[in-house]
Image 1: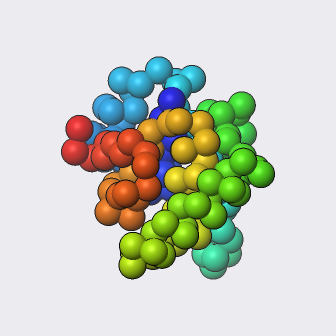
Image 2: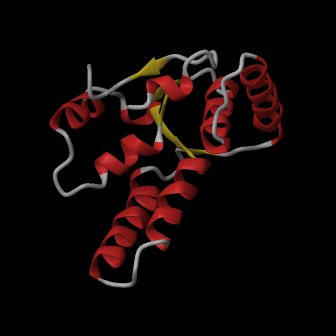
Length: 139
């Protein structure tokens, strides 16, 4: 199983996504590719921050279709087990002197909970969190 980080999902929402990312995704078994509820929240938050207009409505329609259809049944929740894992990850990073954002720690916790890899462009943000990292831009 592979969880897509928000930056991968955002890339896929572009009119012309990076060819290497699309090629990598096409090589995966569709049912092994998931997104987290955190990514859904980040994407919709980003859209909500845009000024009203065509771009906002177009991106909203793309996001609704992507999460409601393309990823239907493949959105992993942040639940109690993930919350405990999150606490461990954040505390470990703090003890090592390296912080981690709330959203990144939540996504990493979900990946640890499901023993899944994470596809992300931001490898450094997730290093030393005990999850397999894949950069679709470099594969």
